[in-house]
Length: 241
Image (cartoon, rainbow, N blue to C red; front, side):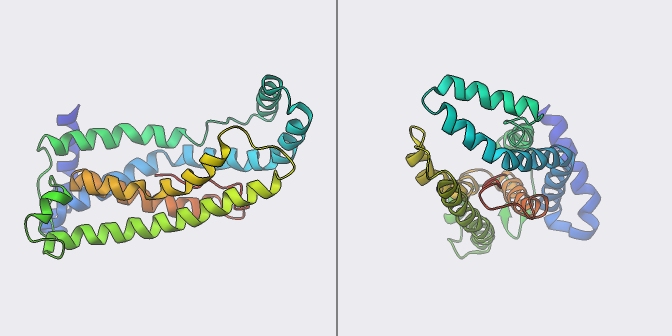
C-alpha cells in the first residue's frame, strides 16, 4: 500500500515538474491533499447539512433537557429519537475527518520510510523541524519554510480559537437556565486550545506530512466559511482538518 501511495505522489510530482522543478514534490503533496479533500467534499456537505439540522433542533433539545433533566437515560433516548425522527446523525460531522486519517497516516509512513524525496526551498521533504534547526537555524532557508507554515497554521488556529470561544459563549447563554453536564466546564476551557494542536503536528512530522496538514487545515477553514455561511456561531463547528 505504501509503495503504491509513494508511486502516486511521485507521478503527481512528475506531472508538475516541468513547471515547478525543485518544488515539484511539495506541489504534488498539496495537489494530493486537494484531491483527498475533493473526494470527501460530498460528505463534508452532508455534515454541514446535519449541523444546520442540529442547530434547528436546538430549541427542541433544550425543551427535552428541561423535561428529562433529572433522568439522563430518558433524556439520551429522547434526543436519539428526535435525531432519528428528523434523520439527523450526531456523528455526521466526524465522518470526513475519519476518512482523511488513513491518507495522512500513509503519507507519514512513506515519509518516515524515505519514500518521498525532494525539497521545498532547501527544506527536505522527509525532514523535520528540529532537524532543520541544526542546519542553518530558525532563520536559515529551510527554517524560514517552517516559519511560513507556522504562520499560516497560527492564523487559522487563532481564527478557530476565537470561533470556538464564541461558540461556547453563545451555547452557554442559550442554555443558561439549564445545569451544565458533568465536565462541561473543563471542556469549555480546553476545546478552544485544540485549534493550536496543528502547530505541534507541523513541528514533529516530516515536511511532506506537515504540508498535508497545513493544506488540509486551510481547506477546512475555507470550507467552513462557505458551507456554514449564515449559521449562528454557536451552531457551527470549531475545528476540522
